[in-house]
Length: 100
Length: 467
Image 1 (cartoon, each protein chain N blue to C red):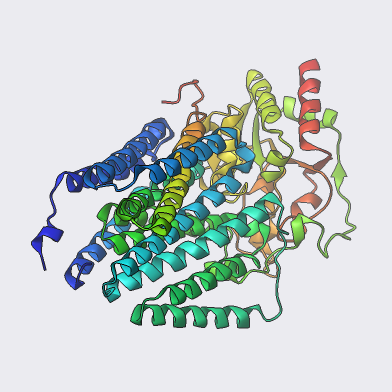
Image 2 (cartoon, rainbow over the protein chains, first blue to last red; image 1 turned 135 degrees about the horizontal axis):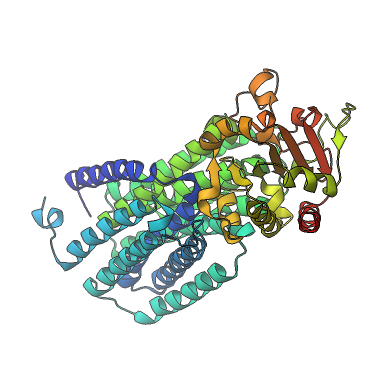
């Protein structure tokens, strides 16, 4: 699959992404922590990409079924996560009645 | 190594980079309620882009199964997002965390079966990441299900402590490491399954002993795990967008976990070891305190509030349980019409997950600029006429500041006791989750208003209208 050097590249991406995540997310105000959780939950549904990769390469029946299950589970996360976050964020209003 | 793999600047590669940028910008826009909704849409767009890039750049052998998965998954997701009540949001997030973990585990299993079918030697970096992904994913799945059960009240919320649980856990952990190591050396379905089954069992055993009051920490931590599991899957497949998005979520969960444990003055270790708190917030050993308290009726409370100049509401989860948020907002509106300053003091651990109380109040149309967090509001109690505590308990207990022997000593609290007078709405004299008596009840300035919060607030509203 991939060798040590690619593994190092992947690790670099991983570490840098954690730093960016830390910087960006510490700036989210406490009032938005629940939408942050459900929204980041939806983002963790990015495993849909992995699920699609596995499903697309599957040729045996078992791996096809596993692929479909993975796609289904990830879609619950993605669709449900983004929708419920939107539903919550829609409710946040300022005193003047606007939400901007 | 091939430079191809490193600089694979095909269309999909570029789409993944754009998608990563959009995820980061989306999270950045969550920095303010004004831009947050837009940010969430950017993240959704990033997801769509990543999915389309994957679908287009890969030859997909059979569409049927994938389509079935997409349709059923989207249907369930959309249905639950529409139907869930805001009070049950922690349960939904717990379930979604679990599904995220499950997806990672299933993807790892699928990739393993494919590699075994190919009959090639599986390199060790791949087998290591397959293990990481299935162990973290599997434990996240069952841990989240138990957390869901505790939040929903299906699993007892009190800490369940097996006498030799640490021995069992360490034994399981060692066997899991052994099977994982065996798998890495000689990948096979049986060692894979052994490690997966033990991970699933450990997920249950680790969350079971943790008390209901600590669930916010557990959900935040599991949130982080679901991201880490995703990143691990990215390592399995050698896919950067999975690694980036997964680590963003991992970082987010860890930050929230730290905020929660700090707000409870506990270490993560202390939470995970469990056993904190008396069952279901019921009376602990302190219930027989016979010191006198002053109790008032809704009419008296109405008078106090109507003639105040500034009022701070201190809502806790009890407010959400009583579904009183709409009545409280109505009361606040009435007071504001009288020219009274009204604010809400929100403790970081109020509610059942980080920021839960803010969502519940936003649902009742309380403007978010009236919601103040601990640091913003604590200096203001001194100059406030009436503090109204509704369904909050431990987070207002002054002994957290003064009594070194108290289990909650050192926990940052809302300085409600500094207000000129305090109205404490409660069902009974029972103690909070921590099982500690609240010294606030016995202060001279504190008036207890016993009864159902919704009922009491309704009565206060109609009294004030009649004034």
